[in-house]
Figure 1 (cartoon, rainbow over the protein chains, first blue to last red):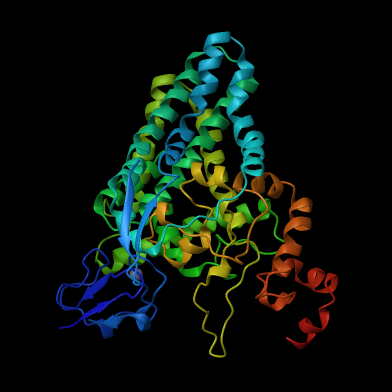
Figure 2 (cartoon, rainbow over the protein chains, first blue to last red):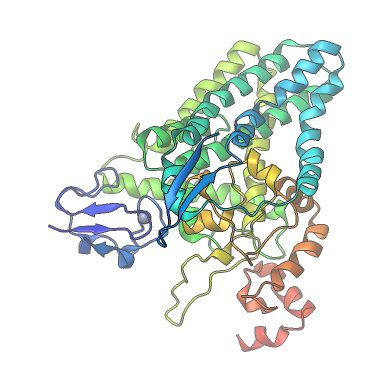
Length: 53
Length: 398
Ligand SMILES: [Zn+2]
């Protein structure tokens, strides 16, 4: 389980925790997020911009 | 006066004092200006005083912006973290939230209990609506932050203008799609503000609803549920506005209709001037470029920035949506407006004048350099505008 960070606002998507409010349960793989996934906090960085922590 | 010290990479120690610190109180007090008119009406018995806030917004504000001019000061990057952590600044955005409720209820009380001429009743409703439009600005500043408290306050204050969907629409929709033809909240060249409003107001609601519906679907929850954040804020609006109707009678129905429309109109006006004609280009793979500093119009006019929590430093806001208002920066050579927002709104309300001032400015921008293919043009005006600027051959080629 890895973590991925938004380079703009430091939002972290943790695969172990998921993001319940956004509807991604614990254990959601980052790769399985939709291709047009936008950062839930800033919306100006997208899936391909996220960096593995 | 409070200051901040920091050490630069060069080893040099700096001391920074925010000269705007206390002036930010203007953003807190500005929404209370309807009370100025009410107070003078109560003192003198002359209803004309109720129009005073309209004069402050539409006459005094553009003149003050013109007289006081622009402010290009930026805090040094080294103190921005301290500036962001200084709780004073965020406290101002917290206290303005209840003041918006006080404002609407106070003005509604006056409109509902006094014997007023029809025109001063309408003026009061309009003045209340303009003040609640500033509530959308407050909700905007709060809604961009990560803390639960600030996000909740954003939804609470957005209930006053009955615009609860804005939080989702703006953060998740507008920031993602800004300066593209698809964005209902970015105005196109040749599109009048009136035509824009009819695209923006329903378009923004639809986009917010779609984004929230998709989120709830992922959460396995029905869209019509108490988890729907749009419905949460709208129910608060319903309680507030039904409460006013029960308290002050049927007169509140036209009052609230005018109030709501005028509040939304403030946001429409801001959206209209913020990205007029600006376009993010697509690469060969049809992928839209990232939002750049030159995809927003800016104004450094000090007065209107101080009453709008720095909203007019719009490029930095779109580049860094979570940056706090006290830290937003001026950059050289950005698309810039010739007056503050309040003056630009007036210009926008006369479309012919707006085009005369803004179309030239738009085409003169460095990254556009007269090329209409790099402009977000209203499709129905495309042929006429390409002809006007001698670029019809591009339409045939494309
Ligand atoms: Zn982000």
